[in-house]
Length: 164
Ligand SMILES: Nc1nc(=O)n([C@H]2C[C@H](O)[C@@H](COP(=O)(O)O)O2)cc1CO
Ligand SMILES: [Zn+2]
Image (cartoon, rainbow, N blue to C red; front, side, top):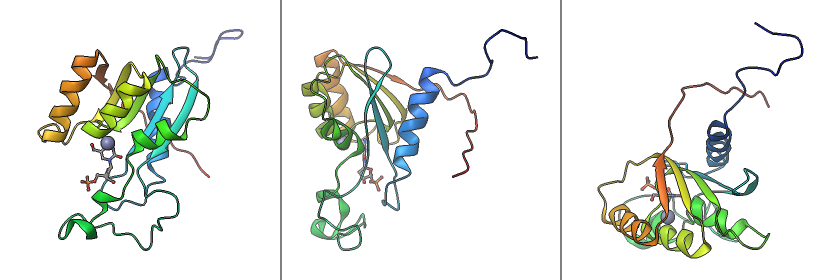
């Protein structure tokens, strides 16, 4: 029930807002198998940067391979930049010291190194489907050693529909 003079109810929480932005960013990905999005936020809840997984500038989405198997040179893995690294590299404002990272998939070991070195202190992730892989196990080892906090996003199951 709307009460006059009172704030609107049912607005997005900070976590819904930032994870929603991360997921929206992931929707830009051309990867046919995993679309990953990231959003970096300051300690006082300002969005600093965003990213999604894709090939580096100049490496055409139509010419570089999106496959997952076969000769490594013919798979995406040697070429794709992860969403988290893109979000870190996209930031042009100076320091990310103390920032929070919202990401739709748990960061790999290579991104963990960049996250730690950039000074990001907190990770909020949604999916952890590669938890059993050496990459994610190593990632958690480094994040733990460096004192980077990480916690799973609590899905609220709110559906957000935007007509564009
Ligand atoms: N945290 C991550 N951020 C990412 O942006 N990625 C990207 C790299 C690939 O483009 C894709 C994973 O491909 P696949 O193995 O699920 O088909 O997601 C992958 C991970 C996993 O550690
Ligand atoms: Zn990564």
